[in-house]
Image 1 (cartoon, helix red, strand yellow):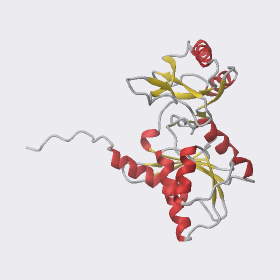
Image 2 (cartoon, rainbow, N blue to C red; image 1 turned 180 degrees about the horizontal axis):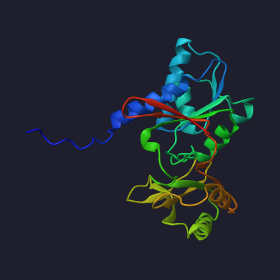
Image 3 (cartoon, rainbow, N blue to C red; image 1 turned 120 degrees about the horizontal axis):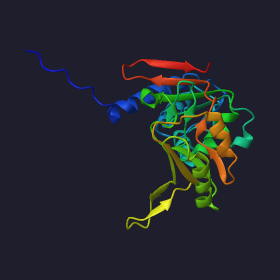
Image 4 (cartoon, helix red, strand yellow; image 1 turned 135 degrees about the vertical axis):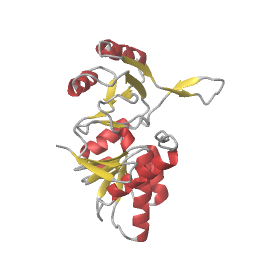
Length: 256
């Protein structure tokens, strides 16, 4: 008598890292010598930085410079030997490469759960092309399905701003919001408010079943709230999304 079929194996951390690396390397294949790149932030983008550093070190690429989207990325790029430019000094950004927290069927994104959404949006929005690198776990039917939509807010009056956000979006299904906190360096189970590289706070917007509503309208409503700096919905920005799948294949999705 045959044994029962084993249940599907959950994607383990090592396998997921392999998928991230595959997607990142495929994106780096698009890089040509003398390009200026937008350098993304996060665990998937880190694989792209490592690959770029290797290609520059061996001479396979020359004259490449990057505009980093976070202090963490800046440090990583310096460590692997990628020359860097400030955004104001980049005459043109030919290509940006970054990961995403979520990708919907229209290639709209949630990004910035790590807190770098403002710099990411500024740099990736300034570029000629924006290539997103993900494993297939990031594909969702609607934005907001798997976690928070981050919103960067100024520290002054942040609790008041949080209240305004709650008031505007309270009628959306399953909505709730809070200020992001991190474990305090002081210890004793204390928490501090999370600080972005820009010295701002993050409001986390949650939707129990993802966002049901017009994303553009929600974006516009958020940006009209005094105290809101930017949000983590990247709408219509991705040129291509490279998806590494568990079966070993890679899909390249293009914006319609």
